[in-house]
Length: 256
Image: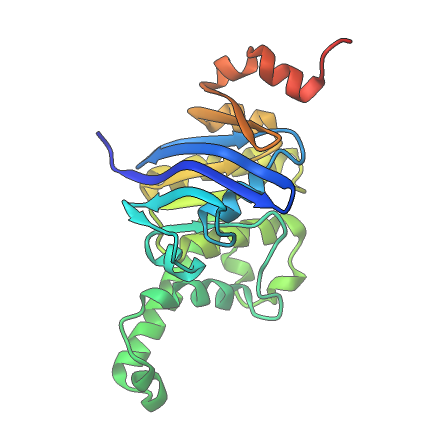
């Protein structure tokens, strides 16, 4: 059996009188590619925020590689090997494309603050290693030629790709992608599908994906979880989900 990387048990998130997520359960193993879908307002991004400790769940337990995350901050979650992208792009817009990626890799540096202050040989070795690694990652997404441009000036689709590159720079075991195809055209989405499959294979990653583009979800996910009003209403293979009457009703409604 492959390693369990992420486990959520009876996760609940309440905002006053609104229950945004209720009784969410998930087990994600090494190498899996799982989709989390549902109508607008279903609670998908709230789930991501709870899983990554942006929000602290009102009830339930979230474990990453068997570690309870209840008292952990988001940066500690990243240290455990889980990273994410955001629905709304959150790049360091005034930094270069390259520096955005280098910053993400700093948590794995082997030199100290004193090395940086004194500009020791170890500092320069680590600086060169981070730069080389960042350029390698940018090349995977065809962004190497944009390395020295300001990230805020990139076209929307390239900013989306840069967010994924930055997430990969944290050396994750598990990556959560929140609507990575949002704002992309058809050809960009097709390329993104290939890229997600490639990074999963080459980096040995598990992927949890929120996406409204059903062609993308059905084309690459092995298992799909459907959320509606904060509750899981279905789970299964793409073919099972496509023909599930409860899922169809949640998206399209039912006759009176």
